[in-house]
Length: 216
Image (cartoon, rainbow, N blue to C red; front, side, top):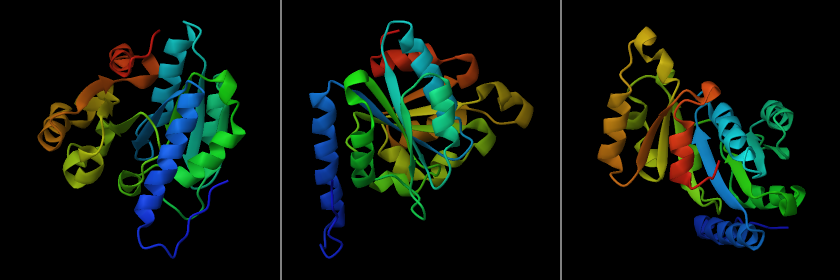
């Protein structure tokens, strides 16, 4: 079990230490883990389901942590899709942190999992400041959120490795150009990668999985 000393002036340093512990634990079990961030309704859950389906065909067992302020709807979706999953409720906190994730790892059957998706709480502000100990950070945005999402939330995009622009099949209907958030992201983070997807149909998922090094 982990404890955070709130009297310590460098709280973020403590979070980084706990993130390193999570990373080492996952490495000992041979688990690759990804932090999936994004606003409510962006399609995080659907994208994780699509990636899990792709790797399952090659015998890779994925698990999930469903982060939400309250409720277990996403956990139920993951379990219905055959993933070992737990619900991680944060109460009044708008993000997951390494401390909470560490406790969650104690509840998962790590010996049965090769791949772990950590679905962060749905917003584009708070999660940016809290490392979890995962291998890479993804941000999912939907074209239904508008063309200016990257410009309005630069921090999370500057710190992410990959941006997934989802629901691109709706772009014409709502008059949104997906290329605009792509260009905004590349201006903020020239080293990041951008993928366009329609998660439920699996469109663009293969290319994303290849970037993540997930065999399917």
